[in-house]
Image 1: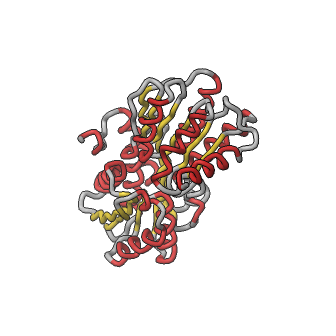
Image 2 (image 1 turned 45 degrees about the horizontal axis):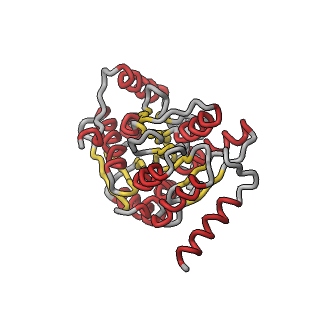
Image 3 (image 1 turned 90 degrees about the vertical axis):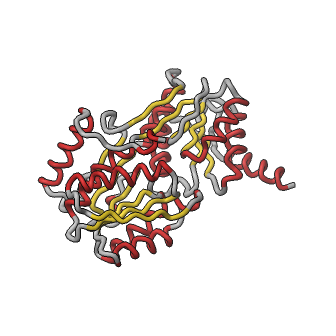
Amino acid sequence: MKNTALALGFAAALFAAPAFAQTAPAILFDVGGKFDRSFNQAAFEGAERFKRETGQQYAEFEIRNTAEREQAIRNLARRGASVVVAVGFSNRAAVETVAKEFPDVKFTLIDSVVNLPNVQSITFREHEGSFLVGMAAAMASKTAKVGFVGGMDIPLIRKFAKGYEEGAKHVNPQIEVIQNMTGTTPAAFADPTRGGELARGQFDRGVDVVYAAAGATGLGVYQAAKDANRFAIGVDSNQNHLHPGTMLTSMIKRVDVAVYNAMSDARKGTWKAGATSLGLKEEGVGYAIDTNNRALVTADMERRINEARDAIIAGRLQVTDITAQR
């Protein structure tokens, strides 16, 4: 009965898309949901851009618990989607299993790699973008103590942290970087209360700039920074608008472009399987300057950050990718 009810729930969710045809794309959002204002929302915006520009609907499903992943992807594939876009590293095993069952269906996996002939794997060099915002943090800090709050304690999030630390120490080799991870399960990306607690603990230790790579958990970090009149740095989406005046910048990760390209290429017949890594050179990551934080990032700060960006792209400055060492 439980499996039957689950299947009916999936079917209802999929058929809810009013004009979903067999050739339409589909997207599976990860824990935190499409309105997490961060990673998933960037993916959602890419799908919405596709819909606006083509007039074509897409099917979608939001993960509520890890048990749903495989069956959700299987149902999307069974409907004959032009491409199934699975957002998040946690979907790797499910994509690998289902892609073998449906060799004629295209799958795009974001943030992990599956080596199958019908899977496109998109990863990002988050350490490069994190290096730049680490520099911004060090230049803005008056205490020479900056913080990092990660979501789930995994190599991917440690990659953000390492790049951030190296960027901060590129500016000030003596700076202290205090790091906390929220948890060891995907729920760590959807716990803003805990994020706020961790940020306040870092502020108590003298931190005056904190970078969150934690999905919806980061919302608690940013609120805590606002309440304490400290700086915070957003992630994935441009989050500068959330608390203008205390959001120093955001590390942009162009998940929106990855999703849009996957859907658009499937529609045009130009979609290709294989692994792609997007970094500063490909404009897959970067940092955000807009009207919300323009007054916080001085011309000198911007100049130094852009010089480092150019040096990384040219290969003159190396940023450690801890995931490449495993």
